[in-house]
Image 1 (cartoon, rainbow, N blue to C red):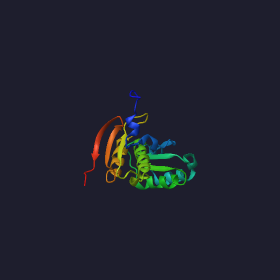
Image 2 (image 1 turned 90 degrees about the vertical axis):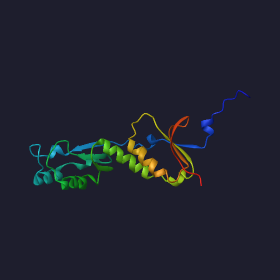
Image 3 (image 1 turned 60 degrees about the vertical axis):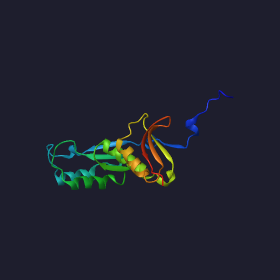
Image 4 (image 1 turned 90 degrees about the horizontal axis):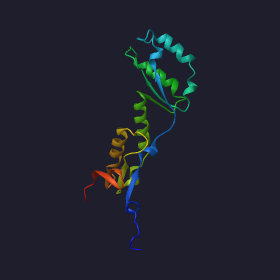
Length: 170
């Protein structure tokens, strides 16, 4: 069997992490505070509090919500806090910012759950391309989390990697 094909990638000690597998496919909602502004420029506390009491917050149940204001307006910080109070019993996640900020936070939370000790002394490949747009912040977060524990970190695919980090030998 001298012509037998050997899959060296499958036999290698490399451990691949695919950030796409951490992606939470839950519904994402953007709550724009501009709809609560008086004449599109200022938030009136009394009107806002009335809205908060009458709005159906259950529509945000189990959703990831990004809260922001898309117009240049006078919005006190406590307004965002009041929104968080209303959303918290229902929403799965609440962030201040846009949908990109929300995606970054969801990846950050997912990476936080990874136990870096599971990769102690291992050669890790962080998969680089796929169907989803993984934020750069996720790659930075994962690299930072793993670096103190791993033997090496590479980016790409096991058959074609870019070296990122290699621990010094003792």
